[in-house]
Length: 166
Image (cartoon, rainbow, N blue to C red; front, top):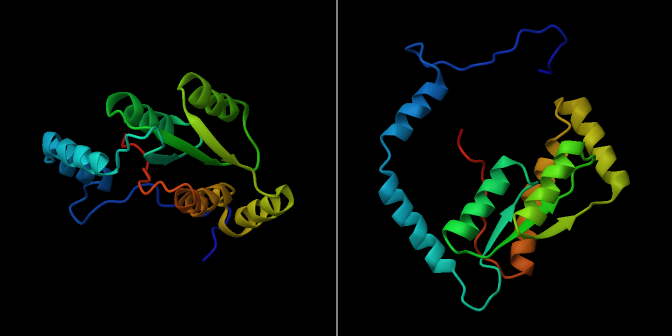
């Protein structure tokens, strides 16, 4: 069913014991052997690490906290050479544009920015807003579908997707 004006919406999910799912996730994270996980992570990076100066990992993002953190850590902590890739939003906010510019210029990253046909992009964003109450959906779908194409075209087999945990 579609969301209705003044409809009560569930804001947090709880298990049958009355504990929120975010708390359960926190409990799981506390049991992870992070030293071992980092070793596994480094093995994956080493499998795809190149020594010919070409990009060895692709990081999709907009320059927000997640993509900026991921690309920074990959480059400066783990010695990878990331190519950052962005599907342009329908409209940049001032802070969004500033974050994007800081990510690329201050962070020291190459970026492949794709700006889709504005007429189609606006139409899809409008439809997402009307039908899903989610204007950002077009950006999300564009970013998720565009990235594998660039990885394939540029022969970069490792893609670093995901948001950082908070």
